[in-house]
Length: 274
Image (tube, rainbow, N blue to C red; front, top):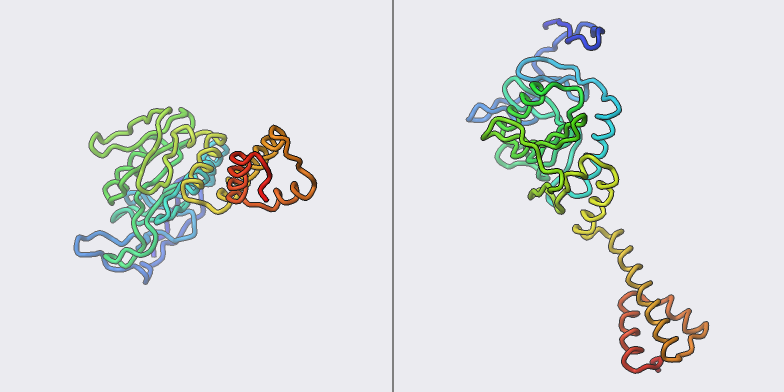
């Protein structure tokens, strides 16, 4: 076993950590030499990460990072496509000497039959507040090299959203008026929704609507029903049709489809159906 001190942060050191023997659950890499995504180098469920052989203590976030992380998880969770699953702080064996988590990621549901492990994330997000550009770039390079299809970073202090380009080996600023479209998403995410809670709220509603969420459908049903009742009452007033308490009670019991049928009858016959 090897004892060492984690890097000091803000003038404070961490107590010595004794590196354990290699865990038994590590499996041999596949024929290409690539470790499985769940073959961890660090201890899961701790704040340990490893980037290119450097063991890092992932400290809790300050206010800007923490708040944007919440927005990110909220909006991606609401817009995720049916065959995919989102995760927060999911530890991934990114390479031979890298084992770390992104802030939020989206991957296909289930187990990858080619590896027997979970699927690799396809779309990964990082919130960048105190990290250096070098640190976040190293992570993006390793994630891209591992096969993660897209890496998006929210640069909190600049109010920018950037995407990693492996072709240019650099971060590309995304148009703040544009949208993020991807097969992992049921509804495109406006770039502004990654930075603003109000925009995120509206985006999640559209995402749930696109997925046919039962609660959203119920709300739409009530809105259609209320609109039909109001229209029927206006027509009855215009045509001189008396609406007594019995007829008003009857209106309240009808669903949207039945109200629409009644509306069409009143409109065409100009009287209350027999």
